[in-house]
Amino acid sequence: MKILVPVKRVIDYNVKPRVKADGTGVDLANVKMSINPFDEIAVEEAIRIKEAGKATEIVAVSIGPAKAQETLRTALAMGADRAILVQTDDEVEPLAVAKILKAIAEAEEPGLILLGKQAIDDDSNQTGQMLAALMGRPQGTFANTVDVDGDSVTVKREVDGGLETVKLSLPAIVTTDLRLNEPRYASLPNIMKAKSKPLDTKAPADYGVDTAPRLKTHKVTEPPVRQAGIKVADVDELVAKIKALGIA
Image 1 (tube, rainbow, N blue to C red):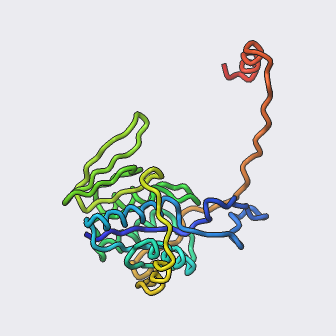
Image 2 (tube, rainbow, N blue to C red):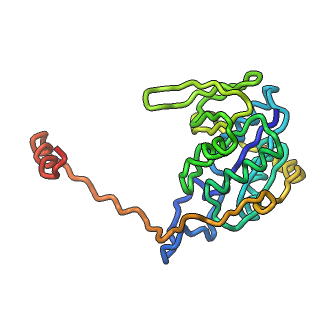
Image 3 (cartoon, one colour):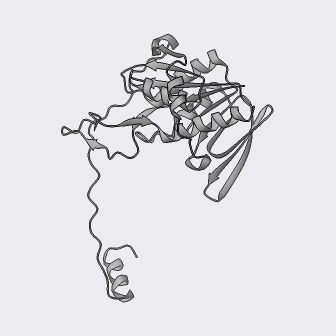
């Protein structure tokens, strides 16, 4: 079985994003970029499935600028076998990403597509679901357990009331949550090996997909500064203040 793992290049989760002075977007100049944490979990899970003898090949895919090669090399260093970069400088929206992934999946014919449930830059949480709808494949979202068994995969996912278990027939699409696993660190020998692993470069036009945005960002602003709290002497004063605010 082949596993397809889409990965996205985002601002490193340890970095505090800064808004541009003109409010047109987030400032990416001299900012550390890395693989989206949810996608990193998906890569790790794909590697574990392969190590268990349930998959034969892992293909990492990224859609973005030329520098996204670094993100793909990270996935290759972790254990992916080869990579595909769909190079574009456009800000690609989830629907366009899903359409490109659909075309790649039709060419690669993976038994399982593993991807993060969302990217930490736009928090859209849409690509996996859109891809499943476009391809007509079963989907398991927000997975915290993935178990491949023959021609099916069992996914446990967190819901409001606890855990839900779904069994999907392969080929299927699964999006990963934070509690699925702890991604490994790539060793130095694997980082060196990753430099020689195959990495193909394509363009959205190769898949017949128009990446022109359908949404326009008018303004980006910093969130308001949180106001300081106050101390109350007793419960009666607390109740009085709550009533004054019209909360109760």
